[in-house]
Length: 526
Image 1: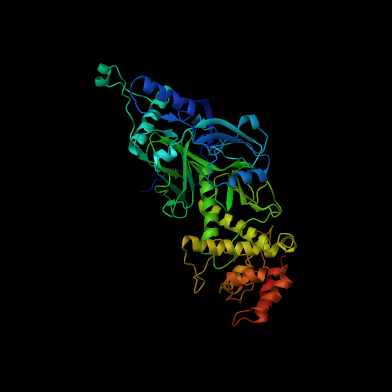
Image 2: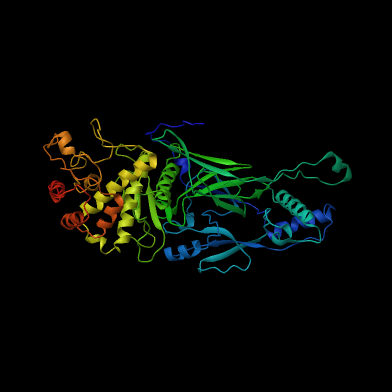
């Protein structure tokens, strides 16, 4: 089912999607203190006869990393689901980041989560906020709940839910009704909600396909106070049963991060998409009405494809940094040029992706995907040349390589079957066959590596000169592959060294003269 809810290039009111609004502090019904109160109340009212004892199973904690190394240490424990907002506060809106106001101007904000009793923090910025009781319904109640009783397993499960419901009631977090029968008995029978399995689906708009598409490997969390579950979506965009069982409504959210890369909102904020609090399955419909989240999803789709999809045998990209860590991509909701920052380390992003076009409208999703692939091609190139060698490579090689990677991989990603065999004329979008007119101010973004693969000579097809009396590339070279060129690239620093490497590995039917003519036509404007 299609949901067309926006004007593709319009600027929309996005204030509601920006920063989350964190409101008043609430009483946490999962805290040991409140669960003990609930149990005592039930026993006093004669509604629970078991000899249950409440003990803590987890701690509600807060981290404050001081640098990127500490943040990486915290995130190294992949069992933790980290939230930028406090879990025992009312959260309003569907914003895409939160930075605590008391830490304004500082690069890092508080991170909240729950950890098992006995957990040892890897950083000094760590504070225990409360002791809590967790009963994960998919596990054995006697083993996991912190509810010790002589009752059978099914009775312990029922006792847990009864105590939690009463705790919800006395903390003001649930509404209950008094039944007529129990009123006559002088007892209260609060209506215990039924269990349900939390599930989420993530669907993002694609401007090229003009439809919503499932988002694979989106990291989704479900949360009710300090009861937290998490899981990644699959190729259908669904978490399946990974989020477990709940009794009360859960708030769903997405963190745009995997083990390989981390997407940021602005300089330091974790990119996230927050949904509503619902009881049941939740679907994220991410489209132009939520431009930040749509950009996050588009960047994520490109990253996940580059990390796991078919990329013609070229080396997969990952971070080059003196301190290691993940590739960090910073989304900036502004006009300007996207770029790769080769020497970034620590808190600074390796890639900047800017999301507005020259007229101030949002960039199309496939444009963002193509740009992300382009910048990730730089990451892989830099990584493979050990950084310091990379800066010795001429711009014409680094940018022309990224141009070819973005062109061929974006085609493949969208299933485009584009060929230059008997092509009827015109310019295929983003193929740079009209270079050097593409961007005369930056002539090093060339068609060079595209031309080494295709079988199309633009100079013969369109004539030797463009309308501005600039020479098209003279391309009678064909037959190289991206994989072969990737290997040649890592041994080349400029057009001269590239030419020699190309001749050493030229395909059948390609002559040295053809390579020379192509290289010379490219060198004419560089």
